[in-house]
Image (cartoon, rainbow, N blue to C red; front, side, top):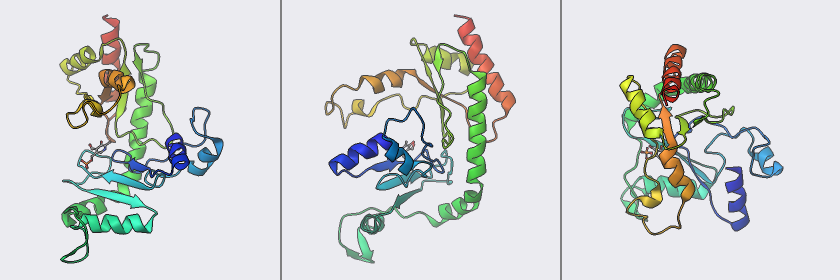
Length: 244
Ligand SMILES: Cc1ncc(COP(=O)(O)O)c(C=O)c1O
């Protein structure tokens, strides 16, 4: 994000953060892996997602870290004009009922979903902390396997997914092996956006996202996942590679 913010600042662009998977996540403390300047690192260090760019969009889809029982979402911004425009877009482009100034949407947060989120909100920090524990346990249990790349563990990460990369074209075979052992896994996301019909032919080739779409595999993760189950999943992954 630091590098993106710098490019945007240099060219007068707004940055919209997709925070759908990042409720409660924070920007990293300064570190040597950063691709932005020290000044940007200092400014952004430990900032919550949603407070980094001009606006942040969060999702309360039921599977998210903070999930409702149906659809819902949240926009953050520090800009009064963008806030007012968002409030208008949310209710058919109107400030005042039946006075439509622009074309908008019906995008109000349903009160039932709001009530559910209100009950769940006080628990989110603990749930995110438990997701970090799960990620850390995977990290240790999968250490030393040369055919996979595990995600970097950084302090502010909330691990909506724990996504490994499986090298040498073995991702689908590993997923099938896990499935046979009663372990589900998912590919987020199998089709890069530039291959979707609405964007097809509109962008130059994106070899990195093409490669990643064939390598990524998300392992089970949720706050209550026990260390014993994580060890079983990791042992099954080790078995898969030992059999090759
Ligand atoms: C990264 C990312 N962005 C955006 C979305 C869309 O969220 P919603 O379905 O609540 O609009 C999702 C949900 O799957 C997501 O994971």
